[in-house]
Amino acid sequence: MSQNGVWEFAGKTDPGCVRANNEDGLAIDEDLGLLIVADGMGGHNSGEVASELAISTIRSFARRMLGGEKTMVALGGDPLLSARAQLLEHFVESANTMIFEKGRAFPRDAGMGTTVVAVLVDQKSVAVAHVGDSRLYLFRGGVLSQLTEDHSLVGDQLRRGLITPEAAAHSTLQNILTRALGAESIVKVDVAEHPVFPGDILILSTDGLDKMVSDEEVANVLREDSTPARVVDVLVRLARQAGGTDNITVVCARLGSSRPQGLWGKMSGFLQGRP
Image (tube, rainbow, N blue to C red; front, side, top):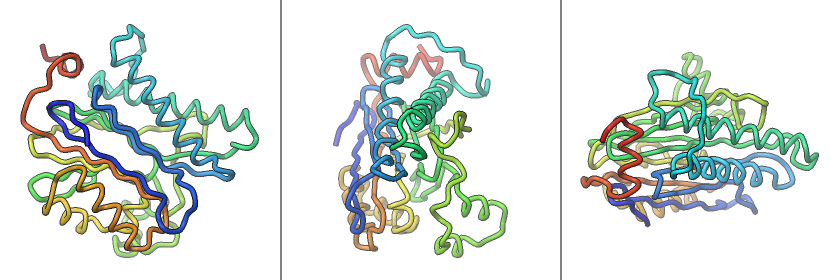
């Protein structure tokens, strides 16, 4: 488990009980308050290539552009979003370009893709950019809320009222995505910002958790013990006990009560318009 003075972080990835390789990936950069989870897809281990490329690209761009390098980017996104959120969107779009171009350049990697959920946190808010069906949850006051929408056929059917949540949970079409990094030269990235308060917990996860462990089970784990390292261990174990039919990845972040110090604190304050 790591921490940056305000947030505590922990992450774990596991191949599960069925698959020989792990095409999921995660990154935790406590200096930047950056969290990433990705779930790759594609033959010949290309899914692993795609998820690793997504994570490395987003992290590299974030380190360059949020870590002090004076790189200028034209931010033409939603004016209601902060510069931080618009930059995060740019990082994810750049990852899409990298994966798409690699798939075109190398026949072995043709058709590869990945989901991604990327988060930037500070002491007052969380910015999230995501593509695919990997999720971001917020646990506050004993209640678990999903902050992202699944970019999947079943997710679309559920939002349109064509199926019930119970039917969605057992649908054989759960693996059909409507968006993924690398599928097209341009991808629509969902970007949002949410306020956070001391005691809040964030969960980033791939569908290897979400399809094996219900939201209520996740909430019960968090009610019992909110220590991030403990949370990720328990959730991965529960997913394996439920069958572990897919790779499983979980990142947990818990907000404490102190204000960050040093470069991270100054950077987050600047991006939020605070001194």
